[in-house]
Length: 263
Image (tube, rainbow, N blue to C red; front, side, top):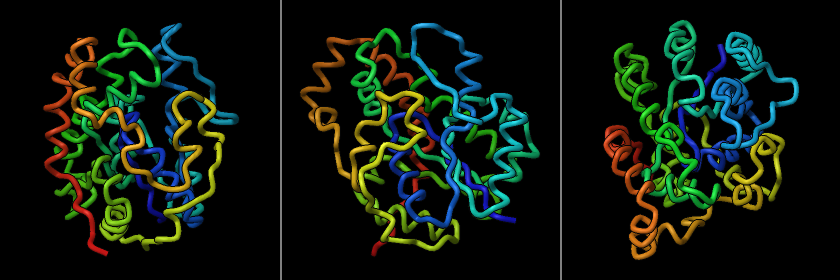
């Protein structure tokens, strides 16, 4: 049976560029946020964000899972999935959870919130659910209870921190591959700029990754100037409230983060 790897993530945590590396390998299928069309149907909040269905992709949970299983019959398959898109459905589907290798990708919510704000241009549209650590923590706790983490017979989680990844992409990718017993392919770390079809559902989110040729550290440089961050949090207090609320959830998963491999 081929590996079916889920990367439980949330937006603005450098997961699209992580998946870009795996797509570039050529020996894996990669699937981009398979329940996103289902999520937008169920959320049904006009004016928050536009979306487009994926061409030929199902929009019913059971059919989505069947489609993923079918794709995974071909070869190792990696799924980048936003945890809150179908959290309740996934958590209730123990058969599916036992089929999957579970990994997580997280990022300091300060950078997630500021990156979100940069893209959408407003603090009013941001919700706690959109930031993501709360849902990822719920899935993490559920997998802990079921002993379904990726390592040590389900006991030890595999968590990538987005900041670690951009600071040492080769070391993190090599460590991730080693943990999952997958060949590390350093040649996959570089590519040609490309607008990929999976970016079409929300075009404003993927300008950086589509123009990239590899991992660029601190691309959104304003977020790493503490004076700018303090001024933004003072001027936009909702951003600070969201950060304070989400930080403990992030810290819980951060304690388990994967350390880079020395190359």
